[in-house]
Length: 152
Image (tube, rainbow, N blue to C red; front, side):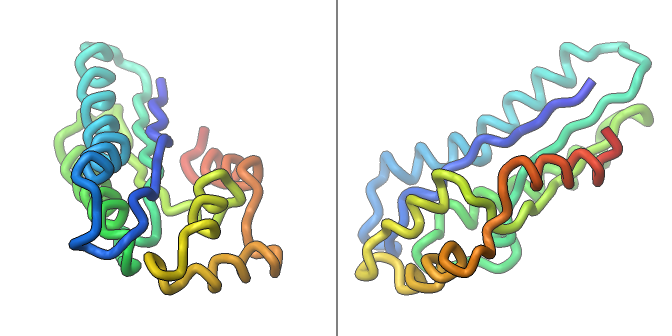
């Protein structure tokens, strides 16, 4: 039985000091709290299941290489990585945990990043160039790679 924690949002994209408190809370809830709650329920419901259990958390490169104006997203994904490491220590022998950094993917989130104003996000042009240069992977390609990596 496999649990995929894949939902994520990058917003708010803005420097610290100009962030909306509700937007920070939404980001942390979706990117960190929800995967923790879902995983907790998953493990509880699995109970004495003897087959293979897998938890796959979709993280981000910003968990280890933060980007200015993405403080909530960077912090949440770093927290998800740390949570995954703790989880791996706690789970029974029949369980595996993966925290995957899927790289740049051509998703709605990337569109939001490219639409961020330069006044809030100094690297916006770099992300526009990733799209223009065809450096964004398709979601299907990334999904196949994750499935291959995690032996599903």
